Length: 307
Image (cartoon, rainbow, N blue to C red):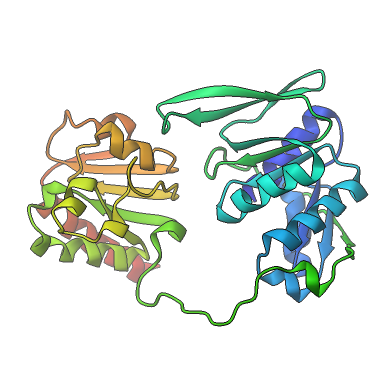
């Protein structure tokens, strides 16, 4: 929805209408609801083959849709699929490509100016492209869509696509059970050396379970094997952008912040009021995590029971 909103605002700046492309199975209500974020028309390729992402096939279909709609600017989400699609699409369309935009672009004639983060989020830079067609991918949680009451007109789109255009064959699927993958989590509960030892991690896992969240940790914790390395977030670990990131007992060194500062809301729990993390936090609690976290779990259970 964020990419659709971004696209509608770009179209508004250009004095034209935005057109969304939806590939695969989707209900009429979901499609028309894109109008709430400013989309005027939806091209829907209702084909079950598109229910599974294939960058080669998607590139061909998106390029065909761009030409059908007469579009000059293509907006994608800077997620895993968008990263694979963006580069291919820019080559296919001979388009300038700016990945990871964090703000709406500005135009100067045919030149598009886009702001994105650089140096692991420590700074920002402005990139420009003057090609006839342009591709932008938007970093998640870079802007909040403002919903209205409009509805989008839905039009069937039947691209020229053959089975041979699909390059990926799925032979089997193994799904993670019992845990939410960190890269897909909307809520992340993370902890650091303030936990004092791996034996105290039960409260972190309990809080994450109650909130439907994934667990993460700082690098020092992974380095001493308190937690597995795949939970390490930061400049040298995973970069994540969840809707809510709860940092417990983490000081907030710049290397850690670089991996999480794109989070929509950051909550910090730490005994040190001078901890760097508080400067980046939306909400902070100065207190002993061994007292705060159990109370937080208790109150959250009450909240869930009442709702």
